Image (cartoon, rainbow, N blue to C red):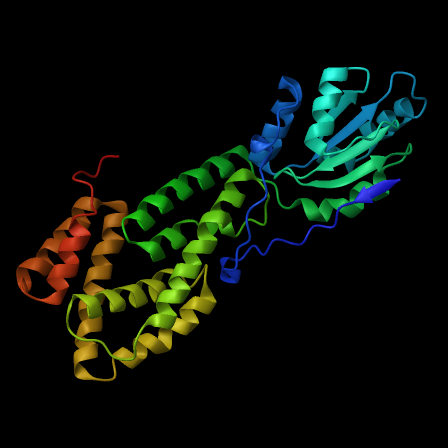
Length: 312
């Protein structure tokens, strides 16, 4: 008898922003054995699900099952692990990993890339229907290059967000967020992007309809400008909320000037993403033009976050 674990679909768009605690990845799961761990790690990297077949030595069904799986194009979409119940240490470790104490043979498990057990139970000789039914729950695959690129983008996004460029950080991981995958890099991007999007959403909600021409007011406007210009492709609902807030600021002369200065600062922030020296030059120009103004105070604070060199 199979137990199919119904998994609540992950909302892949950051706009959901109500992000629950992420499930453990395969890399964080209890260790099984070097060969099994290697397959689980490959699954975590690429998002490809794992099909584990556990057999007793005297099982009459297992040879037919393995033969059919080898010829099944649906089964070919899974990474394979063959476990021998007679190997007591590995089998015990697998039972701990899969949270099961089943002993009937054959036992079949489908493990998603994030370590979630999607299917478990005793199998018959034909598994094609069960595998086809569970496959949509396993998410998209990433190539090794895509996984490496997503990890690199996430690292850059963390740096940007830590320096105060939250909209830039969210924009940076947009490609990874677009992948409806359970690969480690995609899961990490969602774990990072969800709270970051929530911060931006709260900032928009807290933005007043009018601001003073000081550091506090210009900082509010810089945040709104960044959201509108950076987040359309990744958080359109937040952008839609920010647009009228920004328009409201422009309705009177002081607010319009604040937005103009905020746009200059945002241009420096954008330049600094690829060249800190270019961003520094723009910020220093803002300080030189109005050294006693609120924009200069914001620019000085931004200058303190920039590295001294364009080199990593």
